[in-house]
Length: 56
Image (cartoon, rainbow, N blue to C red):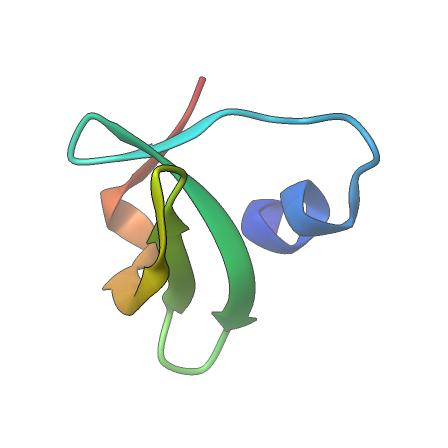
């Protein structure tokens, strides 16, 4: 739920995956995953577990 809130916010919320800043592009609640990309590599999207994301 929080991942969806972050995506819809106007303010930039820093989210980390394995210590690396990422952008969230989609959330799959059923699979408990998020579609992300590293801020410095937007062409490399990947699906990750929501439990591996940390909000700063």
